[in-house]
Length: 67
Length: 201
Image: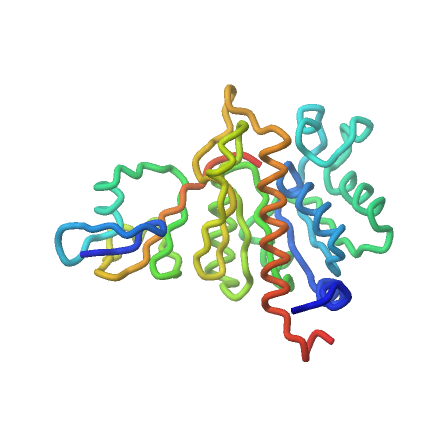
């Protein structure tokens, strides 16, 4: 499947993956994040159950301290 | 196209909330007051310390003051007629709605990443119609080309999303100033883009 991940086109094997699986494949181990799937907020406890499909727009935004 | 008078008229009717009055919030507030925003609602519980003076909009003789009191003084020196609502309080899920639900745009200007996440999740869940301008990643210096705005619906995240503050990567004035003003610029962009000429005049 082909998705937009953080504004870049990315291809993954298979028809769908959970957000947790994508984070694992991409080695995203951020402590604090905001995840938006097609501009909808996905909370932490939904990462493992939310399926990402072909054509989806996924943003995994890393929140770091400082300000 | 809007002319300068129309821009000033539109902005003078807008309310912007700022959660946090540190390096991001204090500098963002000063820009927004200079732009003539109608009213700012600003919340912080901290006290001005000497360590803040390398990047925050405070002065040496204000150390020891509550940030909201010092910032009110400083903003009123820019424009004595600006409308300010200052809350000397830590923003939590229990009070964020009371403070910010009337805002046209809210700026997330916290220091701590877990606070950032709390406010972003709360506002996007409870007030998804209010644009939220957050910031992530502005420590250190240089690497300006990595500073950007990530947009997702009503959420805007300014910064590089990666440079975390640490002992050898401190927050310093230029980069914090750039990102706080990116936030102010996004606020103005949102307010003018959504301006309804029939309603606002």
